[in-house]
Length: 95
Ligand SMILES: [Ca+2]
Ligand SMILES: [Ca+2]
Image (cartoon, rainbow, N blue to C red):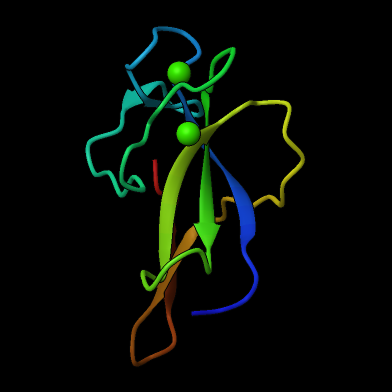
């Protein structure tokens, strides 16, 4: 088990309706989930933003709901690029 944990923001939130998790870029319901056991917990005064935790357990990554004012790393959303054998590439936004 690694001796460090890193945290990264995702665009997941339930700040609009408690317990109803959506991707903020599209407001689409989050169907696939990978929450850490016991989460989302909405602990304390409320946790409405989703972070990915790297290195917390034997799992590669896992999700946690957390206070939106927490300082964490970020992930950039980029187009998905696919290239064929002739090196012709197409670009698709993943939302
Ligand atoms: Ca919440
Ligand atoms: Ca939590």
